[in-house]
Image: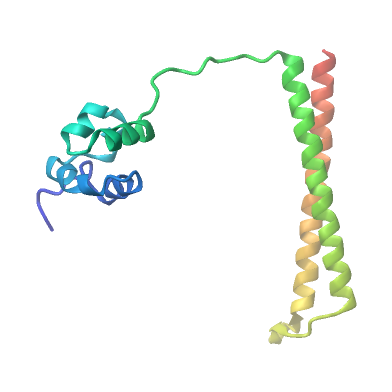
Length: 163
């Protein structure tokens, strides 16, 4: 193994990023200068030009890799705004659980209608249809428990809204 290997320097990830932004011709220079992935976002247009990119490529690479140093303003929502968002999320989650429950009911109906008789565990006479029924039952139990917890959470949120 090379004794001069630097895990924090130029590596395959850096090479892949450069290829992704169109800097294939810059790979040799980046490798020679041992520029790591961690500093790519700190390079300016002038740095890319100095490393061998033309002006257009330097501008594109800078815009793609540059991370803004400005912080986004931290907007604090009012309690009634946060609760209405959470209630909306709960309603959407409930709709999704209903769709999943309907799908599981459909699967259960299909399994009862047409049993699959291939054996998974011949010693215990465990067939695939029994395994699927057991799995559907356990999934239904989990869905019901989760729906119950969601209802409890919705009640807590509504109680907090009242306060």
